[in-house]
Length: 184
Image (cartoon, rainbow, N blue to C red):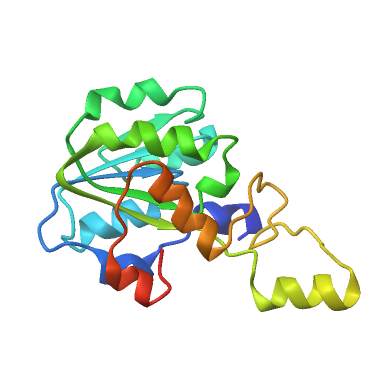
């Protein structure tokens, strides 16, 4: 399997600890080939899966596994999500926000999508990682890679503090359990 296929086909099982008990609808922005959404539904964590994916090839794969898939660039087509207003129980943003020109705008817009008990589960690479800092400080290297913290497609870099500010500045409250465990 090529690296590109692996990149779009990961199942993000680590989100299990953050899932509420009863969930109807989940929307994943950047759903790749839909593997995480399929896994959530197959394991009865959710009943309805929706994905949005910029890669048409990955969106085609996801459409075979998910209830609904939209092939679009979220930043150019954010309004396609308006039909889901107040209906999303879980919004997944797994390694997506760092790829966006304006993650603040996307997060602000997504507030109206969440149901009354809706939550966001997000993962954002921390550029303050010891691996990145060691290479930068001691060797003067900031080498972009095909994936990971220094993914060459990242447009934004976040630390724990700037990640917290990103969500607070767009009107979200952070779960204290996640903050204490360094999970975002």
